[in-house]
Image 1 (cartoon, one colour):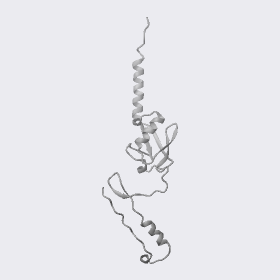
Image 2 (cartoon, helix red, strand yellow; image 1 turned 90 degrees about the vertical axis):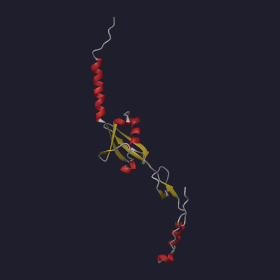
Image 3 (cartoon, helix red, strand yellow; image 1 turned 45 degrees about the vertical axis):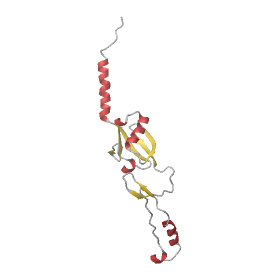
Image 4 (tube, one colour; image 1 turned 60 degrees about the vertical axis):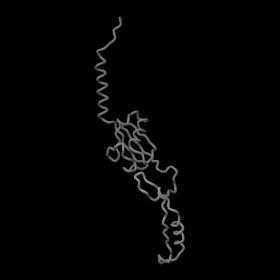
Length: 155
C-alpha cells in the first residue's frame, strides 16, 4: 500500500488580512496529521473524526404489523433483509413471507436502511406476502379435503 504524506495548509494572519488570536487556533488544527481510509469501493478518502462513537449508528425502528408493533434496535447500515431476519424471530414468519414498506413503498432485501432514509424512531410497516398466505390457505384446505374421507376402521 502506498503511504501518502499529508499536505499541510497554513493560514497565516498576514495573508488573510486580519490579525487576532483565531488564526493561531486554526493553524493548530490544520497542522495535524491527516488520516486516510480506504472505502469498500476502493476510493481513498480522508478519515472522518467523530467525537461521540459510543452507540453510533444504532437506530430504533418501530415495526408495525396488522395487529401488533415491535420496537427494534438495529445498525443504521443494515439492510432490509437483515431487518427481516430479526423480525422472523419475533413474528414466526419466514423472511420470504414478509413484505416491508417504508414511506409507502415496498423495499427490497438488498436496500440499506440509511440509504433509503430510515432514521431513529421511524416506522416501518410489515405485511405478510398475500401470495404465500394464499398458498398456505390452499395447502390447508387441500389437506382437510384429502384427509376427511379417510378414517381408521377398528375391528
